[in-house]
Image (cartoon, rainbow, N blue to C red; front, side, top):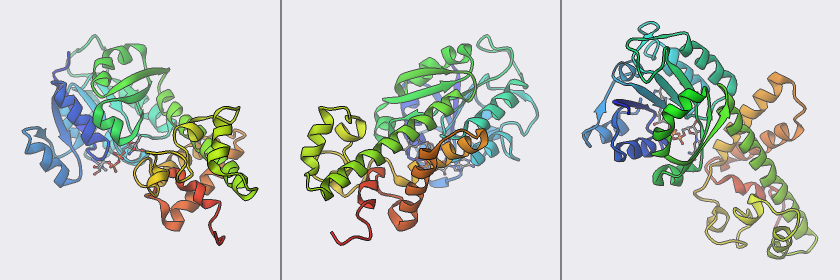
Length: 311
Ligand code: NAD
């Protein structure tokens, strides 16, 4: 269906997603500011380019997987960005899978939809954009089982589905532009709050003399049961195979959770929504990063309840 797929941002997630596109038979062209990672792709015979603009010039669909809103903005509208050469574009579809704020996704989608196509393609009259952040982490990126939360037109979503399916398993259309980004930050906000809630309750239980194993059994057969208690328990020794049982290594880094909470908090502030838990969890995870735990799994928040205490 697609002739050429451009991929920008070959980090922990992007390199694995690009590899799955290559495995699925897509003709991929890549770019990253990190020369070493670009080299590893060119050594495999993959076409590489020096800027986002050059990738767009050589692609029918472009995917970005970048660290932050400001970098995504730069890759689209900066001096070497997609729009550098004017508003007549080759790609008919731009997909941003980075976790960024919905407001930026909406601005970019509006900018792209005002452009024109060099050649009519895929039934599109003007280029389209989808915000399509993912859930699942590095392991799901590696084995192609990511969940994509997609915002944008139904038509663009349908067109892009085969691409998503070569990198992921669950592809969910969340509505118009920005709704994928909104879904992602809301999911992670709920996950952070539930992890903090479970940790706080298990810590209190421990102080009251109930073993975390026993209390977890109660939670998991009662109304406190949730992913943070029955799948990703934060207390060392309660479950096998989770970050808590290996000194909180691997998993989902606290600094990435703090980043997602900053995005949720920024949206809550901008919209003046009543969001006390958003600001509280943002503060807790920022503190963990400041204390040097940014690279540990976010379930290390359990330890936070004992910091400063002699255990
Ligand atoms: P990463 O830092 O490993 O990779 C980002 C890549 O982008 C790097 O290779 C970097 O060199 C490149 N880059 C930075 N600026 C660039 C620019 N101007 N032009 C081109 N390339 C540039 O990050 P990651 O863990 O792969 O995460 C990527 C995105 O996915 C983030 O938005 C993150 O929040 C989100 N995410 C990550 C995970 C995870 O578990 N790692 C899970 C879900 C979502």
